[in-house]
Image 1: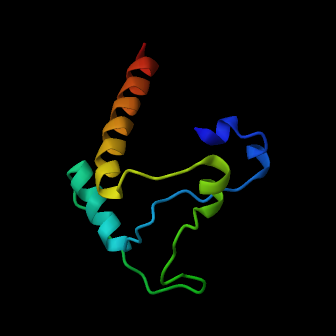
Image 2: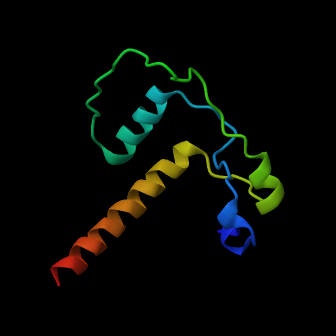
Amino acid sequence: MAALDYDHAMFEVFNLGESETIQLKDLIAGIEGAIGKKARINQLPEQPGDMPLTCADISKARKLLGYKPNTRLSAGLPRFVEWFLQTAHKAETTARV
């Protein structure tokens, strides 16, 4: 939301994330838990350019936007899924009218 009030936000790129690194398998497990379904995984060999570890450098967003993540992914995923499902249901209901 702070980017909406930042004068130069149209021309800036900001990394947003939290300070905790998570493995892809743990992210998948979190999504599975939040939606209550098991993922069908088609694991392929690593591809050229695949990064073994990534981390969002949020220092720019922290400095310019006052960004300070305070929701852990484990808490945010279920909240996001709930919001998404409610929003999708509202859109579906509206489209039928």
